[in-house]
Image 1 (cartoon, chains in turn orange, brown):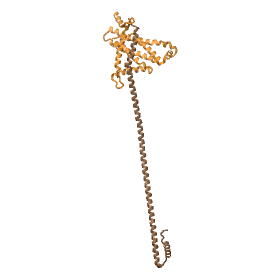
Image 2 (cartoon, helix red, strand yellow):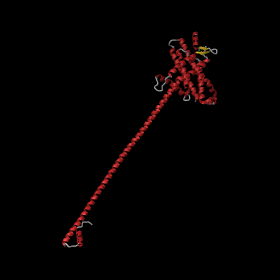
Image 3 (cartoon, helix red, strand yellow):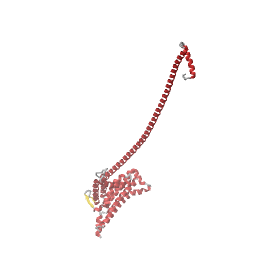
Image 4 (tube, one colour):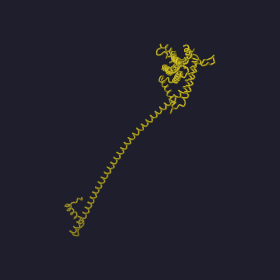
Length: 228
Length: 168
């Protein structure tokens, strides 16, 4: 049993992939390296899929790309409306990144989203985007005034929300992926053959998709709420 | 054990995300969205064009129908006019012919009357000559001209009483 927990702890540990030898050594986490891999794959795929687009007579590749990008665009457009249209590309990027991060356990890599540093960064960017969208839509004055709405007594709540929202986004994603990761690692240690397959389908694919969906869905919902 | 680590890697992740966002927007999302918008604009334009052409066709059709109707009306009018003018021509011809005929008949009557008058006068003068001659024979050769005239008038008065020809 001691062996099991030891193995599990080893898997849970966020390892440092390497250390940049400046300022006394900056550790680069494994999650960042995996993110680089994901980025490389996404950018290469993006360059390949985004080439030679035609207005007339699109090829099969282009039709597939347009279906996916158009579908995502419509999904976010319905949530955000015309005013929030400009945030759609970012949300699409983050959604794709989180989804692939959540599912990359299938390829034997550790999900970057199981590192609280990554989910924290994602949540931080989300709250910056949410508040920025408010400033952009209403102006600095209108944005500050919106904290006292609908009634001034809500002011502390509204200020608290600025911190609660990213924290909840961060922890929800982190907790789900970490939980799924722990269960999968346990299963792999206990029953390495065949048994993990159905669980992997649920925890890696389904949960990975749902968490990516929830993250971008909530972010766009908050943006919509802020720009209204 | 580093289950929760918040350090430099948050910054790295933020940088990664920004780079990924910019790259994907530049290479994939931007071009795809642009192409889709272009296609939408093109299709909208084609629809508008089709609508315009259809409207034009409908307008033309209406115009042609109007023209056709007008042509029908016009042809009917022309026919009517032709019929009327033919009738008028016919009437005037017939009238003229009637008049002409009337005139000819009248002329003929006049001529006949004149002829008759002339004949009557001729006959009268001949009769007068004959009468004078007869009277001369009766009264003898030696009658004067005044006597002749006198006798003639007497004869005429007598004969006229019995057999007036209406020469007067």
